[in-house]
Image (cartoon, rainbow over all chains, first blue to last red; front, side):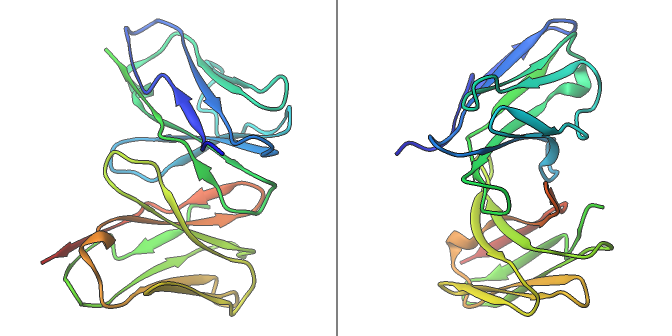
Length: 113
Length: 107
């Protein structure tokens, strides 16, 4: 079937605005992960879900970041009151279960001006 | 916690070989390898699930030394398509990536 999709692909936000980034994982994949990738850096872990349960959110940089996956499929990463340092590519990945390969989406490039 | 990769960058001529190393200060349970081309998502190469395991993918293979908490990625007879940034990731409930090794293959 289709791979992991993310929307929007590009987002420009003025500092202080709220943004919502969407991830559609591969159907049936239990695990879903969010990563933040700054230019020239490796993906940094933000949070992950197993079905609808958020099992680890230790990588979220501040309480302005919030993620949810209410029905165990689609996930949304919300960033409130965006700051310039939030500018990055946000990658979503899914996997059939923990410990297996990650399937990455194309990412959302967020630019905060 | 973040694994350390070396070298940070390498330039090869087509047909040359390269080794990328990944080491961790924590015990490794499994190691993933991904390649990312500029502006694209990381693409899975292989996963090594137990110590001593070696896996291959065309002319790209990897080893995993659990005792030394290290993994190495071997690229032989490199092709232009091998260019990109290679990341190792260590699994411990969440996948933590190294900082990446940028590989450029020139004709």
